[in-house]
Every structure is written in structure tokens, then in C-alpha cells.
Length: 115
Image (cartoon, rainbow, N blue to C red; front, side):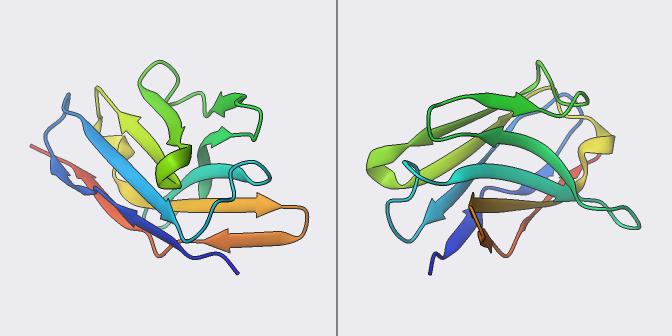
């Protein structure tokens, strides 16, 4: 079993930055693909960014060049650095850990971009 705890969400003005953190309950990055997803009201959950065990990344087109996913193996923590935030980035952001048929989710952290 893996527990994931997100933090770092909040209210930010357009153009601002936030860094989300996802702390895993144990060391999993050598096996698990780590992902950040988001879900806005009335919309489906969508992939924002993903980081594989070997360090490959991919991003949704809507966040390329603005968001960066990274990890700190010593802290068992994955980050999502979000820059140049837009109102359309407003959503509940979830952390995900996936390995074969093991699929874990955090509780989510709210990001609101508004003036």
C-alpha cells in the first residue's frame, strides 16, 4: 500500500506561480510512474504531467513550457512547479502513482487562479 499526500495548493493571481508537492509513504520512484492530474468542475480528470522511473517526462499540451514535474528521491516527494498560471488552470490537482495494476491516488489539493 502507498499513501500519497499532496500540498501546496492555494489562490494565486494570473501569471503567478505555485509549487505542488506529493509525499509518498515509502520509496517507490524506482518502480512507479508518478503523475499529476487535475479535474475542474464539470470536466473530466486529465493528465497534467508524468514522470517515469528512468526520468522521462511528458506534459499536457496546455501546460508545456509552464509546468515542470520533478522528484526528490531522498524525500520520496514529487513536485509540480507551475509558472505563468492562467484562470483555466483552476482545478483540483491529484497525485498518482502507477505500477502495473497498482494505482494509488492522493486526496487532491485545490489550485485557484483568479484576480
